[in-house]
Length: 250
Image 1 (cartoon, rainbow, N blue to C red):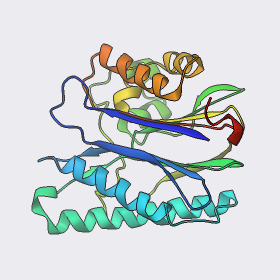
Image 2 (image 1 turned 180 degrees about the vertical axis):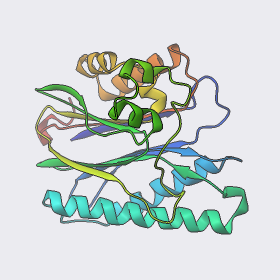
Image 3 (image 1 turned 90 degrees about the horizontal axis):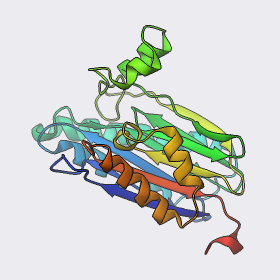
């Protein structure tokens, strides 16, 4: 496996409230995370950084993720624990009142990838079938599209596009979507905040991931495209590529 994580403040925001990374457990499996924080007085970066820090700490001492059920259980239990931590922190720190974060997290093993998400940070896969969004946005606009009230084209420019129906840390309990997919040699996972997905089309994402060059160059290109298209938000992404061990340096 090979991986890259990059984040950028963008061209407009004063602070970067996104966080994330790609972390390795005791068996060499990957956990990729992107979290897009929100809340006044810079509480958004507190929420996203606390989430990533806790999951990283727990993942790095984990082993034995051998099947999808174990991976799904791990993500559900630990993300729910993070939700409690954030919710309690906001209650005891008035400056963090109302803080929360989106999260998309993927466990990548040599047999499968399991992805969990809350909010509108997204997970995609590029494989022999093409480029596909795995996650479903928990947003007002996506719900309007899903129920046929507006078209996908209308959703792109909807004035309430940023309204989330779910976030991590804002309620005492939280629901998440969890999916497991086949992850095979040559496949790539892309996780990103809406600072990328709102600014770069899926066609451009796919073309960039298919282009020659190192993962670092592809990540840098995607961030540059988002900034060229306005860069109004923080831009964060993680890419995990399935390579045989002998190919790791390619």
